[in-house]
Amino acid sequence: MNKLLGLGALLLFALFATSCKTFSGTPQIKPDYTDEQIRLSEAANIRRMIPNSPVKALWLSHLMLQKSEQDEVVDSALTALFTDCSSEVKTLMEKAVSDEQWYEAEKLCKTLMCVCGTEAVAPEVQASIQAGLSEKTVAGIETAESAETEPLHKTSDFIKGTVTIWVDKGVTVQNRIGYSEVALGSGFFIDATGSIITNYHVIQSEVDPKYEGYSRLYIKLAGKSDDRIPAKVIGWDASCDLALIKADVKPGFVFELGSASDLEVGDRIIAVGAPVGLEHTVTSGIISAVERDVGMPGKVIQIDAAVNSGNSGGPIVDENGKVQGVVFAGLLQYQGLNFVIPVELLKAELTALYCGGEVLHPWIGMTGRTKKVYPSDEEGVGVEVLYVLPAGIADYADINPGDVICSFDGVPVKNMDDLHNAMIPAGTDRIVEIEIIPGGETPADADGAPNRKIVKIYLEKRPEYPGYTIYQNELLYKAFYPIVGMELVPVSSASVGKYAVKSVIKGSVADESGFADGDPVEIISAEPAPDKSYLYVEVYAKKRRKGYLDVTLGFAVPLDSTSFF
Image 1 (tube, rainbow, N blue to C red):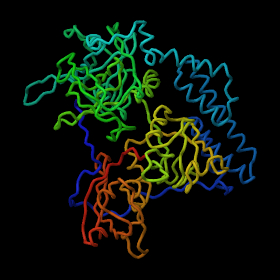
Image 2: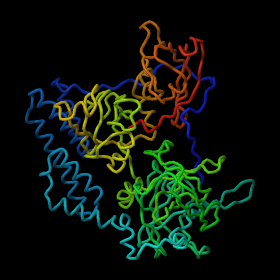
Image 3: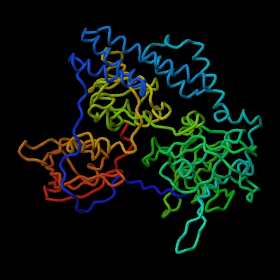
Image 4: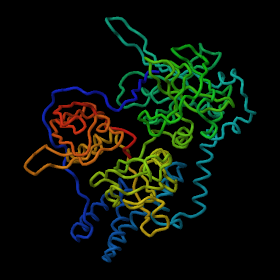
């Protein structure tokens, strides 16, 4: 594998020099729709948005119309705006159906039904879209049936169903000597038409617009290692490190996808792949853990089976012969610490991967954590909103810190994993419903109560580094809460850059650094890394837990984590 993951969020505790900065961006303010002039201006902006962003325009016009109805100031212009937006989205849906762009058609169909009601899309159109999606993706989802063979559980069959991924990157010249550059990985067949699952990082040079070199994708079949067969990338997801490629071959074996319900810690598994180019290597081991957090959307599986560079993209197979995951990373300096993308995540992505192109993840401008009635509870009762980005999607929808999300797009949400698993297949540029319980209550308290509300929300494309978006659009001391994990309040208006810690998020960088409520803190500097992946912070503090000993700390905080959504 050519991807090395670190498990810790905190990278360093050391002094460093950087320019002084006690503010980041200027907070945006959502428009006040009760003001007539602002309402007219926003309506004009939304109308200009229709040609390029019709779904977002539909959502904003819905919010304006809803707010106006509450304030009893509805006028015909707002109603006409909403009608025009919905008509444009419907036209796009009909075109997607005509062009057999089923994934796009489904998103637009669900958007219309969410905002305008189920009657907005004719039943026969809904049926046509579902039939088109099933025809396009059934091979990948029901692999055992599509192969029309009885499942075989011999190791030799698994080898036949696994391929070596070969990415030719041309020749690199060093000291006047040319060296062939090749990226190696593994993959496995999931349907009888030659569709193959692998890792995104294996085929990244094929689709990454930042890559400017030569790149050609091939596969090698079991028993035919001298033959390189051209392949093409169908769909990919950089965040989840998954890709679907296709070659014009008849698979020797088609894998069946398993289920999380079949998997327990201690179960035996085998890994098939091409470590360091040694094709068709089989290693065995056990499931070491099933809920490891390594910064990807959702949890991953830890295994102790030996895997190395070249195993990336290969299958992890259980004793029943079903794929339980995709190898994607390991800690090279340690033995037996390797990680696998769970099959449930793969299944959630299949439809989007089959439909082609880049799979985008949604973003609604919040951070949160699992809400529990008691800290000792194993089960959560929802996701508590900790922070809302000013003038972000959630802010427009009147979602506030302290609110509890208990369902997303019809899927019950009890914890952060549930929320991520529901958001991944939802896609972007569509409107969904989420169920909210106002802050201060739990789902059990508010069950059946009138304050439980449904909120319609637009799904934007997730930024590469959400924390950097917050850094750009928030006052620095307020950005410390979602990014560093400590809520700061100014000591006084005269003391610029000096604050007191109001609260600390458990498990955050601030918590692990020993900060506590009431600690005096002075922000010396905070600068993002050149690639915007980390925020380098220097603070002066008097920690209560250390007897108010003066200390200057420098640390790096990741600007992406599973707490951002």
